[in-house]
Image (cartoon, rainbow, N blue to C red; front, side, top):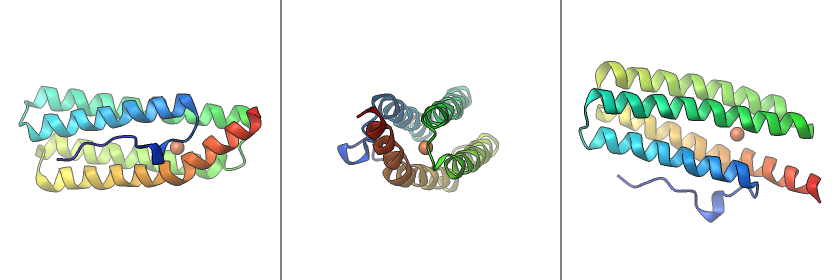
Length: 135
Ligand SMILES: [Fe+2]
């Protein structure tokens, strides 16, 4: 399966956010690898927990940056983050229950696609706003 990577096009211009997005993609790749390599339950569980925890931490960093800078899109951005975390938990717990089925992995991939679209629009908007404030 193709690896996720933070291409130039997906950079927000904020060093912290971009570094965390890079780590996040790494965490997704590790999970997908663990699943498709037929790794044991413990390894898959570990990578899923890491991914959920990392998303939680990263979203809260973004929200702190928004709060500090009085970002006007803060409320809507937070709504997206909450819903995203919820769905990610649902997908990973279904992989926990049924194992890494094709359907489960398809859902996970679809959900990562949603994140990429979010990065490509909302996070880039945030990055531009933060950079403007610094100027
Ligand atoms: Fe975000």
